[in-house]
Image (tube, rainbow, N blue to C red; front, side, top):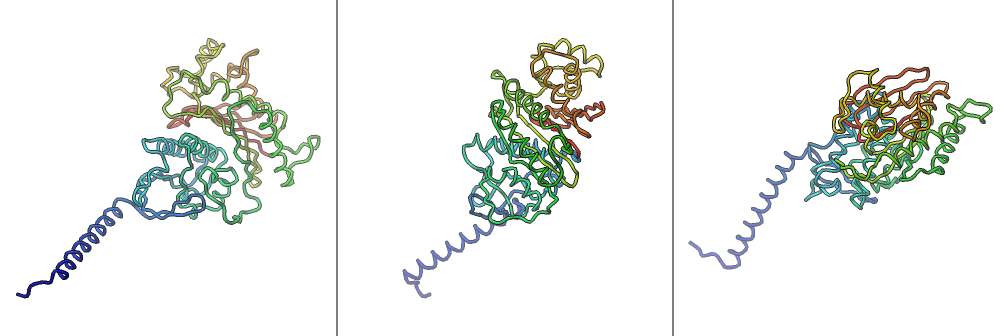
Length: 385
């Protein structure tokens, strides 16, 4: 047998090792494809990267609206919160061309202002606590109307996504105010919100001056109600001695919107605080709340028991309507509700922890329990014109 030359032997050994490495990489890729569902594109400051995405990404409901699909949206928001604040921060889960936990916004076909605000607030909190921007996934697959709404709200800025070209959206599409956020009671910000909404209505030919009165809502009353909601977040939502399931940044978030198709004006304020049911024992009129509970089904005020959150909110509103000289958690709730009575047609909804309370002009009050907590308190005013 012919003896191999030393150089030939070295070449064969190298070739064998290279072939082995290729097989190992190929098998690893096959395992990745089996474990990870598909390739996705990550967007960051104008740059894109293609990676494999886990099949277990958070899939959001197509109808991401708190009016039509409340329960599914609240559950989706809870999943988003858990994903953002699990052991590894969202945006740090990219390992060797893979992303293990992610949120798929491409599945959304319709989004409401309230749901968009809560979504943005969760990402804003995660970004603030992480100290850096998050990662956007498959932005090119997002519905144009949904992407436009999120862009107008300021959500894309949270993800460092650059809007390279304007989107073509119907002229009668949703107009939404850029998200506002703060820690204090900001009269200037509340005034700016009302002015922007008035401008939107006039641009659409849906409003005249105050004496002409086709406006959907009394803007002076709206301003007062927003200030009351800010007072809640500033003074009651974030007590210092509270232990939190998720970290908080002691802020409120706010937006407004005009929907020409539905002829509806919406104003929303959200905080990630302890909620109305948890704060009730700290009311100066707490005994009155206890008596009010007698008009409703059995209740529990254990801070970790959300079973009767709907009853708690309803009782708090009932006491607020009949009380005077109270702080925000007393009379302030009535002021928030009173705005609806100044509208030709309006509705107030309060989501607080796991309770949902609805009041419509004309005196209709309803309350129910949500499947999971909304993660704070959301106050939504709607007026039709």
